[in-house]
Length: 68
Figure 1 (cartoon, rainbow, N blue to C red):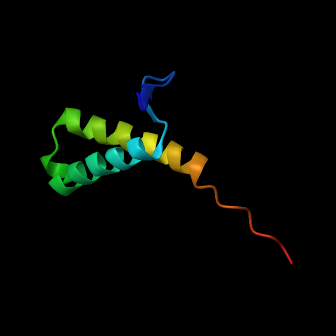
Figure 2: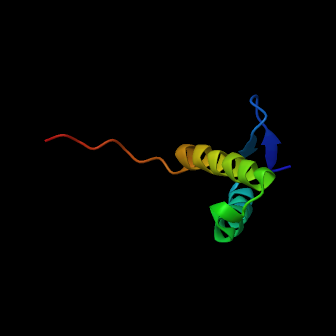
């Protein structure tokens, strides 16, 4: 399974396919607009966004700038 529960109970993304599916879910929820989200949807959006952020930080690292 691509998404697993981490220690905190939040979902963890483990591969690119799962990341892309997560981003589609995030996009669909954001298109509804914050005011139109049910409480469960808002919580789902939060959990999905945090999982995507963790995945991106681990996969898409940005090297530190080199000083002169």
